[in-house]
Length: 322
Image (cartoon, rainbow, N blue to C red; front, side, top):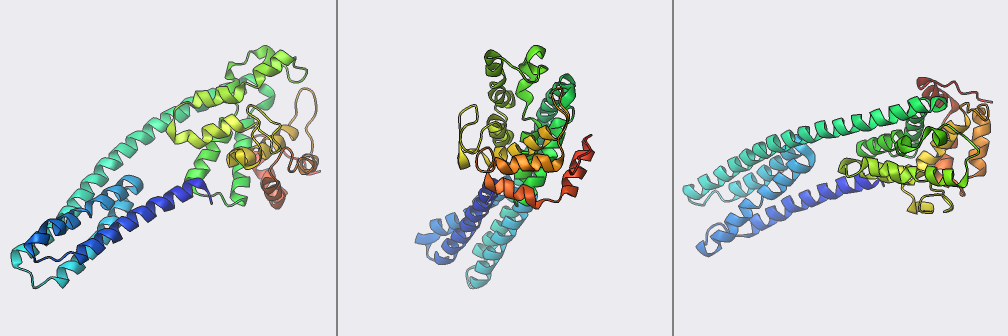
C-alpha cells in the first residue's frame, strides 16, 4: 500500500479513535456528583482536539465531519441526561456551539495557511520547471525527454495501482525534475554523448545528488527528491550514486528506471537512431531483476502499445511498434 495512503489512513484512525475515546469518557463520567464535575467538563473539552486535528489534516471537509461526529455523541449524551438541572443542560448546549465555533475558526485559519503554502509550493515548482526546461534547451537531442518520461512513469504507476493523489504528484515531480542536476554540467560534457573519459563520467554521476540538492528542503517534495537522488540505481545494486538494491530503492525510482530507458532507446541520439518499441521492450525484458524491478517490468508489458504511443505523441515523438 502506498506510504502516503497509509499515512492518510493512520491520521483518520487516530482522529476517529480520539472522538470515540472522548465519547466513551463523556458517557462514563457521571454528570451529577460535584466531585466528578471537573472530569466531566474535561471530557467535554476533549472533543475540541480531534476537531482541530481533522481541520488541520483534511481541511474544511475533515473539520465538518469531525465536528458533526462530536455533535452526534454530545447530543446523545445530552438527551440521556435530560433529568439534570436546566443550568447544566444549557451549559452542555453551549459546549456544542463552542465545538462549531472552534471548528469554523480552525477551518478558516488552516485553509488560509494551506492556500499560502500551496502558492509557495507552486512558485518553487515553477522555478524548478524553468531549470528543467533550460536543460532541455541545451540538450537539443533530448527535447521533451522529461515530459515523456513523466507521462511514461505515470502510465506505469497507474497500472501498478499507485493512483493516490499525493503519490501521483510526487511521481510527476520526480520524473520531470530527474535530470535537473545536470544544469551544472559544462556543455563539453553534457553535449558529448558517448565516449566520456573517466573524469567526465565522475562529473556526470554527481547529477543525481546535485538534483536532490537543488530540490533541497522543499518538504512537499520529499519523495520526489529521493526519486531524483535514486533514479540511476539498479535493482541488483550495481547502480549509482549509493548502490541501493531491490526494495531499498524508492518505488518511484524503480518505476522511473523503466520509463527512462524506454524513452532513451526509442528516440534518436547523435550516436544511434531510435529503436522500435518492440526492440526497446526486448531490452527491458532482458534486464528484468538486474537493472529493473520485476514488478515494474511486468506492469510495463501489461500496458497496450497504443497507450505508450499516445503518451509519446503528446510529447513530440512517434513510436514505431516494430
